[in-house]
Amino acid sequence: MTDDQWFQSAVVYQVYPRSFQDCDGDGIGDVPGIVSRLDYLQQLGIDVLWLSPIYTSPQDDNGYDISDYQEIDPVFGTLVDVDELIAKAHARGIRIVMDLVVNHTSDEHPWFVESRSSKDNPKRDWYWWRPPRDGHEAGQRGAEPTNCESFFSGPTWELDEATGEYYLHLFSRKQPDLNWENPEVREAVYAMMRWWLDRGIDGFRMDVINMISKVTDLPDGQPIPGRAPLGNGHPFFLCGPRNHEFLQEMHREVFEGRADKLLTVGEMPGVTVEEAVLFTDPERHEVDMVFQFEHVQLDVREHKWDRVDVDLRDLKASLAHWQNGLAERGWNSLYWNNHDQPRAVSRFGSDDPAHRVAAAKLLGTVLHLHRGTPYVYQGEELGMTNVPFASAADFLDIESVNYHAAAVAAGEDPEVVLANLRLGSRDNARSPMQWDLTDHAGFTTGTPWAAVNPNYTDINAASAVADQDSVFHHYRRLIALRHDEPAVVHGTYQLLAPSHETLYAFTRTHEGTELLVLANFSGDEVAIDDAVPDLASWEGAPLLLGNLSPEVPTTAPLRGWEARVLKR
Ligand code: ISL
Image 1 (spheres, protein in one colour):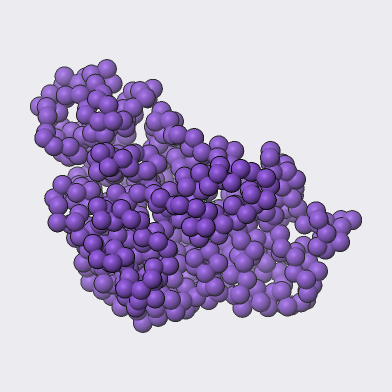
Image 2 (cartoon, protein in one colour):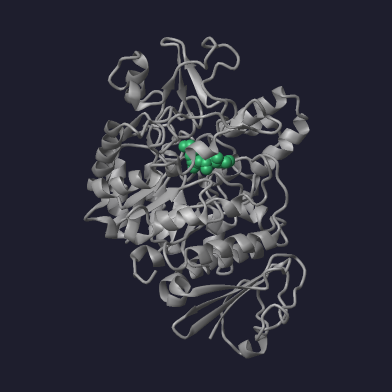
């Protein structure tokens, strides 16, 4: 891709509003809280702020279940607060991207309330309604129209007693799937999107946007080992037959004429590189980039809750596959963290206090030196870690709560289930932002909705901002480097030493500039001579960025968790 688009040199910061900053003392973060932290974000240097959903919602899935797309939930504030946020962010040169959750609504959305009211309601067809399976009576065991398993445990179908039919929900039963086959649904969504853009926002992060097109006869899935008769419906609802068509239509109806100024990123679980090339090819007018999941599933086996350690060789192979796959056409998004993923420093690095700071900086360095648009999730710039959950009762997320109930009911060992939750729960990412040393880490003056990680006494923004050697300042330098160094933005990527077990090494080359990135993913020293074919030729090349002091010769072996970026 040769086009110079603004988002190619931009860095996005994700705010999970519920856990970012509370201003009114109710223990839940809010929009005025975000406004109050704009100076901090400006100091970090980010270009774009993506907000997880703040719309009116019963909060069954923390706002990913929306009952009014054009109102703000009172726990987060008002539309006036949002207008103020947009204006004040823009005044600082920061763009605002909103979450767009239109694969499903809340079951309390007026559209669904109408749809469920009777079989002949005009909005009946706005959702996926099906009679019980042939030969079964509604409510009977096995009467669900198909065997598919939802992302949040159990079947994808819920019986509506009043009409005797089932509705489809890929996520919780309070998140019925919209039927995108119906053109009225699409037009209603597009109108809502235009309304937000007219209000001044700068784009959308599109939730599970590769699930909007389904194989319309919704077949049974292959039974899942260990959880049969539940079956795997992914082939019928990931990147379905009309996915590209719908996104192109959305582009025409919503973005045409203003696309150049906006950022669109489609969240796409299960998307392949081949599909992503199509989704992000600028000439196809679909989305600017996608969130793919390959690298955050390398430590997951059959089941999200069955985890193994990540093998660095797999991680390198996966990232290189995406770097090369989207090199000519398309564009990558780059992330380690978001509100659904355990904390990266605990997962891919080390949260041992002896290594945490170096490991967090190393992960940032590796990610930000790739080609694509980096995303920083709140607290990542501080090296925030997973949470030390004491018991199953500490988990709040619907995915975790449902998994725990289903696994224990199926007779699994509660200690194993608890261990799985500690590693994999989304609650790890959702503990409140650690601002300072005051009560509740400065997140709220009330009672926080989720417990603050007790390590806030060591890990907090106030200490990090005051310390030039902190993870925060390292991220600030990485962001500045992307703004200043074209090779970081445009350079071609080449992986070195793919089979090395602890060293991640690659080059980026652009118009006569070459960058060498070296990162030691272990606590032990690693020699680099074997990995870098012409290492001697890098002798004396300046260190653009490193994560350990004191500085040593640039071609010396890497110390534990050391990362270096050389330039020539
Ligand atoms: O989090 C996951 C695995 O633990 C994923 O299955 C996740 O649910 C999937 O990536 C979709 O995520 C998005 O849509 C969900 C919402 O719960 C997530 O927070 C959101 O990021 C439903 O809207």
